[in-house]
Image 1 (tube, one colour):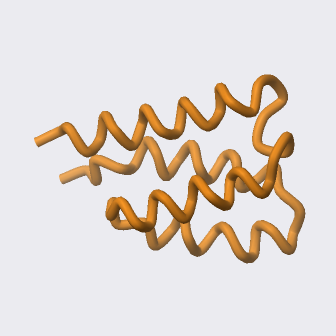
Image 2: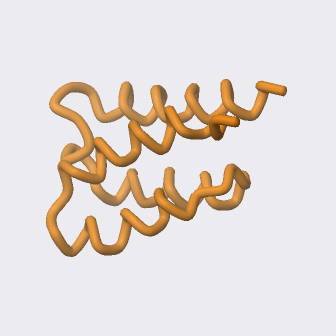
Image 3: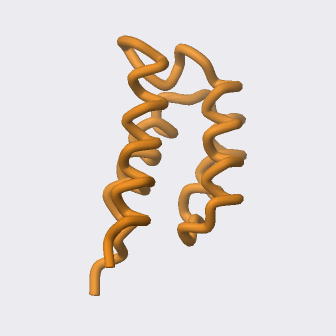
Length: 78
């Protein structure tokens, strides 16, 4: 059975690849170990805010919203 959070993890990994080496070393384990808990997601979102414009070529807000929508869609799946 495929993990319902796999698309979200894939997108977060793409974002992680855009970060500096030190930031990647901190953020990548959060993504790999993400189990779908809301508290883990809140930490990821907080950290995305710290990385700012590095997470997207376009609108940072759009990247935040995309990640949030992916999380919400996965939590609604049965």
